[in-house]
Image (cartoon, rainbow, N blue to C red; front, side, top):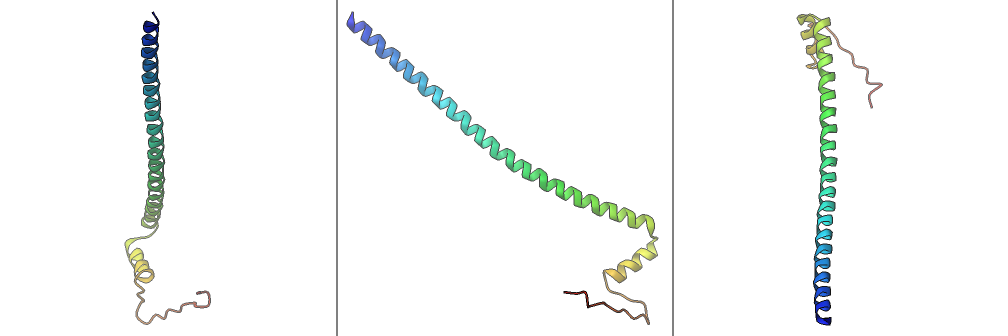
Length: 103
């Protein structure tokens, strides 16, 4: 009868060990998955923030262009672009630059 008890104790301890090992493995898997998902969430949050900044700058540029289109006619707009961006002047016109405020 002692042999039956020792065999059943060994079987129970083996089952208990396997159950414990399986539980630890499953918990380890969940912890690794959780950490991995947290890294992915952080990456996506950064991507969303970058996209929001890009959207904000594009919206600001669009608002500026709409404002320019509404307040100026085409000739005035083209003249302003030629002066400000390209540096053109009208014949006989003198342009003076204030260099005292330049760094």
